[in-house]
Length: 222
Image (cartoon, rainbow, N blue to C red; front, side):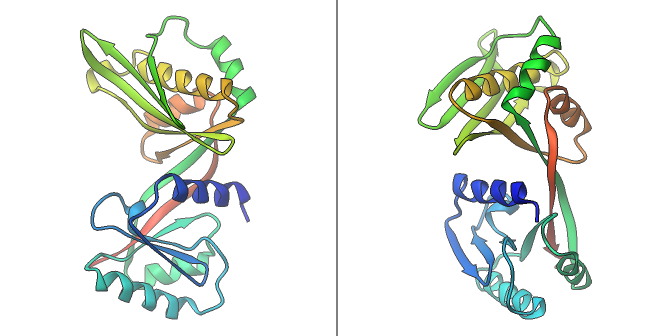
């Protein structure tokens, strides 16, 4: 059992709650008409007592009743037998994503060795959230969001306009959020990035992030 993966999945559920949620024998069903797959899927987080076949049938009926496609969010904690059974039932693999973590002590070294000339982001703090953004000629060219979750800081929506990439803006946004988070008691920072986004993976690893676990979706075809 990867307990870090379980913890971050639970934090994600609390940070971005779905409109309707149902717990069924260790699985969490989330229903929403729009949004990302995370908002409308089944999360097999905990141990099961019923057969996979019966539980998948149950979930499919629940999603069909709401006219939603049935999808499962799988992590490296989920038994491979469930993933194989979903594949056999016609569930396609989508959105393979890496969850990365940087401990508070890991950023300092990279700050000392990193680029010296970078744009300085502006920060806005409200409740448990920090917004960071960089403006150029009155236009926001880069932005990001940090959310305090217990003793960790989640980084979300890191975005740099295409014409301003590879100039240090993304690095500056991440560093500003992480520094602010660590100053305010966060012991770690975490984020998620698609496995196919090699440019972003390179950036985050240069900041000291290391992979904690993988997740992906199994989505019912048709």
